Image (cartoon, rainbow, N blue to C red; front, side, top):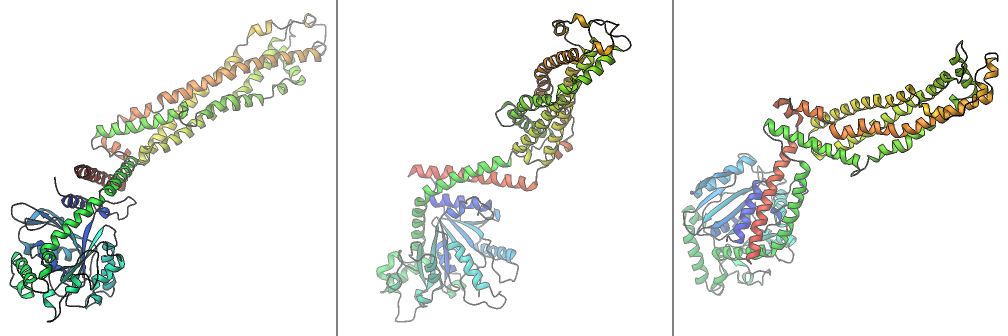
Length: 610
């Protein structure tokens, strides 16, 4: 099983490849939760030499002033055999076996970001992996050296800019600080110790490294510091002896330099008792061991973060919807699926699974009966109106037995007024169904990402409702007209007949139609109209439901589907005109989700093996 550090290195590389640093995102990031070691020190403190000694290779740019102008994330991978090589993340397919070329690429990549011949710095890191049998598994972040003044060509803000960059790394609670201080300077003035003390006052995550021990004034030594008396840290100080400038100029082999370093501590009486925990080789092993311990302690927290983030990413991906299919068939199927989702939501509103359908029932139970009641048939059947219509219906020939034509005209004049409430009921249901369409469209998440399709579906659905409303109006008014066109004879046959009012032509017309008789006619007509209204209160809702509600559930988008099948690829593509930003976001989220799931699997395997 791969080491914990190698596992973290792999996850960090994957995070970096995806830009998963949390910038501009409300989602938590895995990168910030992974432990790393940040190398901090002032300019000319020996930072670069320490790193090269740990790696065992000459690979870092050197020179006067600020040479390190971008963070260098250095991942060391121990291999059992084979030739050592290096890889840059920005050149993933290229292996560097010449470490002088590695040094040049670091300089060139820095210039690409900051500009050639520039002395400004950049927070964009360079990622370098080194594979060698002479290293331990380790992740180090080399940061620009802290400085106190700006030199020619540098912006006045350079001092604060560097400090801000260093702080952005070492303030993270998962960051281990490797504070580099030269032994030939007063530790009280050490930039590395000063900034480390500010972010880690208890020293719980700070390791002190003392460089240039061999360059101290004659008669002085660093024993008090190395034994923790000069400045106490939680972890013991480590002393190192770097190559001299002459050694660097002569390209002295780094492995040979390590041997000379060991020999120095063994042969120097002041340090011989500390030899076992001195030197760059010990420093690398100690940091690797400590990093592994820290990673183990972070595993439960990492698992919790990963589980939480996976859930949030899945929710976000679900909200963004499925990616658009590439071929015409896939696009057509996708549109049909989205339309079916909308149609199902619409049906759920009508069937009561969602709210809104109950408003249709309210039209039939409240609005329609109330509208009929407001017709006030008694005004149609006032004494004057009854007399007028009855006498007009006689024409030149008075009726012989009963004023049948008068009855018909009175009934028709009442029934025709029912058309208004009937049409109003049709329109009220139509309005409710339109509202439910708009509500269903807003509740269909897939339609939110395709504005053109949303407009087309909405328009097609409303057009269908308009056609259904027109058919419903015809059918509903036909019911009213049928009641006017054929009267129920049995109703009138059961009415008591007045033989005395049979129609004596010798009497005047006003004598024959006295008030009592006209009131009886009005009362009979009202009874009949009320009987018809009672029937229409049942039949009109049935007609409306059949022609509008039921038909909307059955075939709301049938015509749209027929037209959809005839559209060309280009028109289907226009319907799925998703915002490019959404497409990019979905792709990014999907990749992050894949990263976190893979990390979850790897970390769980390590956790179970403990």
